[in-house]
Length: 217
Ligand SMILES: [Zn+2]
Ligand SMILES: [Zn+2]
Image 1 (cartoon, rainbow, N blue to C red):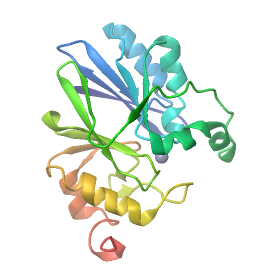
Image 2 (image 1 turned 60 degrees about the vertical axis):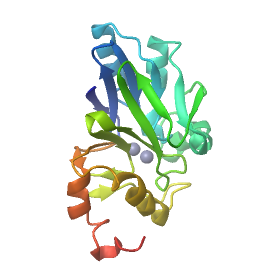
Image 3 (image 1 turned 120 degrees about the horizontal axis):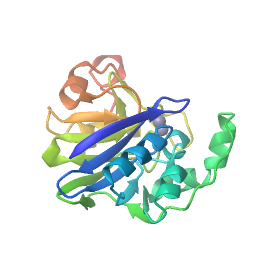
Image 4 (image 1 turned 135 degrees about the vertical axis):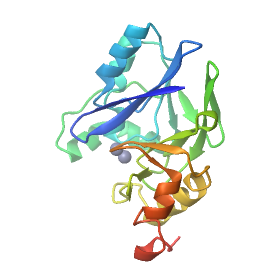
C-alpha cells in the first residue's frame, strides 16, 4: 500500500489516498481541502477509487467529498453510524465556523468495529475510537504497519473534545484501547500535522504519559 497525503483548507487538514499499486485499486480517506489534488492524482494513474472512507464527519474531513463524487459519481461513501448526525449537520458545522455551507451526498455504507475493507491485496481494519467525535474510526493496515488515525491522536497532541459529542475521558480510553495496543513501530498518520508512531506517542505525548493527567483513564 502506498499512502499519499493531500493537505489543504483553512484547518490544514490531511486527506489520504491509499493505493494498492499491484491491483490498481485505491481508497480515498477524509477528502478535505486537498481533494482536488487527490482527484488529479487518481486521474493521472488511471484509477477509479473503490470507496471514500471517513474517519469522522467534522467538516474539514468531508468538505472535499463532493469533489471526489463529481469526478467519480459511483464511489460509495463509508461512515460510522454514530457520526451520521454530525454528517447531516454539515451546514450547521459550516455556520459555526463562519464558512459557506456545502451540499453532501448521503453515506452509502456504515463502518463498524472490526470490519475489514479490502482493495486489491491491501486492507484496512476498522477500529472504533470515539471521544473526539462519537463515530470516529481508525483505519489500521496491519501488513503495512500504519494507521490512519484522523483526529484521535496527533504528533504530541490529541484531538479536541469540546465540540458536540466530544468527551475527554472517552478519547483517552480510545487511544489506550485502539492505538496503544498496536505494534510500537506502527506509523500514525493523523488528520492534521506530521506523522508519528505509537512508540513515540506512548513515551512523549504530554496528554498520554503519566504526569499531566494522562493517567486519568
Ligand atoms: Zn475532527
Ligand atoms: Zn480535523
